Image 1 (cartoon, rainbow, N blue to C red):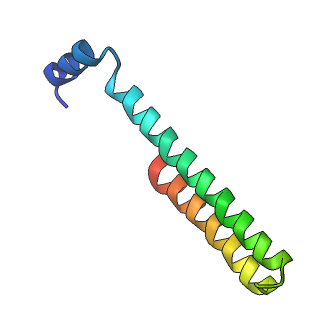
Image 2 (image 1 turned 180 degrees about the vertical axis):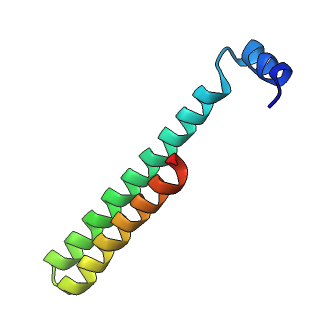
Image 3 (image 1 turned 90 degrees about the vertical axis):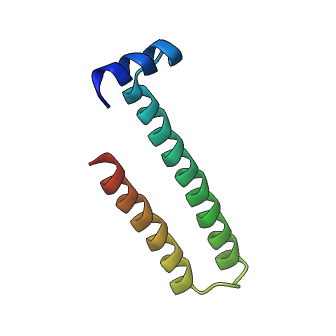
Length: 77
């Protein structure tokens, strides 16, 4: 954005574009964490009730961790 666009954005919204980006990134990571907790809890319940093997449970855990690390790398770098 050029300086005129930044000034217009700040005048109309009262916040900077960097603040908006921070809020959006925070929302993405909050949704990711909530989804991760849901996925891990669901997998744990399935494992505890012997509907999932230990290997399947570990695959879910690894996928959640890898997804979080990948998004952290791509969005925060």
